Each structure stands twice: as structure tokens, then as C-alpha cells.
Length: 174
Image (tube, rainbow, N blue to C red; front, side, top):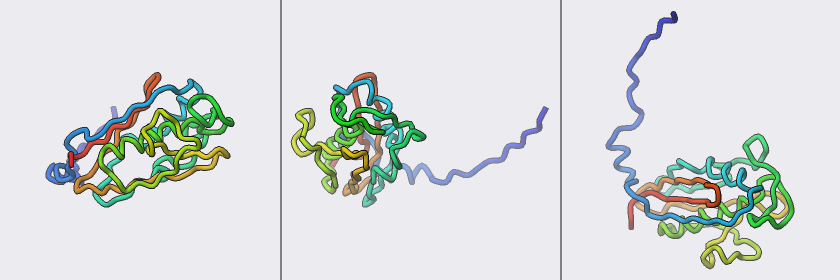
């Protein structure tokens, strides 16, 4: 038998600190579908990297900082560049669907300070001006950022199902 000693550890944040963040409700949600099976692992890797992110008021969310390079060791696989199965095969192919889903959810949450690169060509599945890329045709990354211009924090939830990509933004309605 191994002896175990327990000691109380004080929390690093208080309940009041957490309540002051203002994360109370879903303020936006956007879901897309229509991807081929080959891109699902890449979408899931990107969603895992973003899910659970807290962005405080005035802070900037940088997708590349959360995901790091799209590499096999991070769970990305070779797949067609576009989620519909077209385009050159590249590590992380299909992730632009996640980026566009995130961009649309961010706009629906009322966040206006957004830096995005549109998909060439734009896809009808996204509202006009809401598509975004994070992977170029040559396999290089394209950064996507937004600055939380709300008075309260926002919390990102992201997941990939069998046929859909969903991003939820929690915060306080404006």
C-alpha cells in the first residue's frame, strides 16, 4: 500500500471572478454540413483546439495560436483542400469549413472586429461576406482573428458530428 497525503488547494479564481466574466447564455450558434469523410479528422482536430476557449473583453482570438501548424502529430491528415472533396490534397484539407462556420458564429454574436480572408471562390453555404479560410491552396496557413469588442467575455464551444460542424458562442446578449 502506498500512503497518500491530501492537502487543500485554494482556487486560483473565485466564484465572483467567474460571474464577472458575464458568460451566461448562448449568444450565437452556426452549423454547416456537406463535407466529405476525408476531411472529418481535420475538422475535428481544429474544433478540439478551439473548444473551451475564453476570450476576455478587448482580447484578440487568433486561430493560428490555438491550433498551431496543421501537422500529422496534431491530428491532421491529407485531404482535399475544399470540404466538398475538390482541390489539391494537403495536410489539414477541409478546415476552411470550420473557419467559415466560426466566422459566421462570431458575426452572429455581434462581434464586428474580425480579420478574415474570404474563400476563393465564395461558397453559397455561408452568408455573404461570412466565409473565411485558414488554409491556402498551397497548404500554408492563413490567419483568422477577432477581437472581443463586447463588455463581457465570450466562451467558444466547437464540435464536429458525423455530418455537421457547429460553433457556439456563449456570453451575454448585447
